[in-house]
Image (cartoon, rainbow, N blue to C red):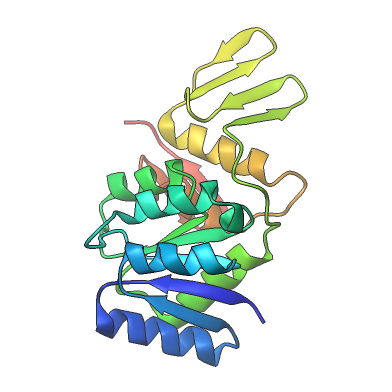
Length: 200
């Protein structure tokens, strides 16, 4: 049974998500704020942390960063479930290293599908800041891509997708998940079997 830490200051939202994750067979531990979440993480490890962005004592991004750095959280997936729907917020969260981002309100089917998808991905020790594949090198902190000694200029959306592809080598990635990782904006659209990108 997978163990999920659910962090949300809204009791109604927390109860709704808790009940659906529990019904799906997950062990769910709840926290209403980041301080309580940190106490939980100090005591035990979790397969996943599902957190709201807007917590009263720490942002969800700060909590995600803490999880990545803590010994008990190095193999933990982090999913953001937030009322912030603006494209910039989605992109910022994904760039910070969370595994997925869902906006409220979310349908039960999508919630469970995205949670299960994130859990199926190989758990890796904190996302490396530098990813390499042959001569290709991607620096997540420096936002820089090089092939050998030559720098490759990528748009922010392209950079996020490239990082996601390099974090999942040899895996078939769902179109909808790729669209989500792109931030769902920046001229990227997903329809049918294809993703497309337009400039301007």
